[in-house]
Length: 186
Image 1 (cartoon, rainbow, N blue to C red):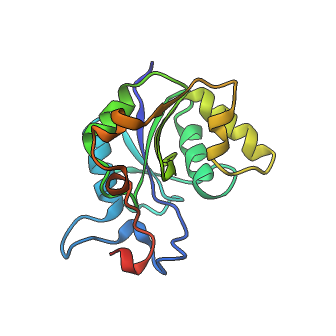
Image 2: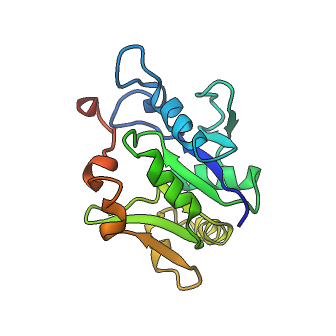
């Protein structure tokens, strides 16, 4: 498989937060959420880009416009358009507790889509998206379907779930996938 491109998803509207999550810090003087995600991805990927609707949220990294669709699908397809045929190791900026070791494990897994699964659900915004999964997503988006989770049931794709003890080896999923969505999460 071709070396994955690390993609920070940082283009959300941050409606519940009331301000742009990508540029928030968890501690005074600390790195922004987007910069933290980029740093962790850079530890396992030679190339990291930021899907942030072209806003330039992480200085020094390529800032990407959205592709077709809405929400995370648009960010994923924008990255796929700029790096066609490349797998994308994706990390949403609002998942600040995902460990580098988990990202390395996802990077090295072989499947069209490698996605963590735990009792809280799937984590498609911390996953390895291969070209076939991205093509399937593009097909769904062309039909006006923007949800990512249904790809798990697409029988055309080799989907590999990272779950159970294999996922628990990286920590408690409810802590790993702690999500910064609202002011009280800070």
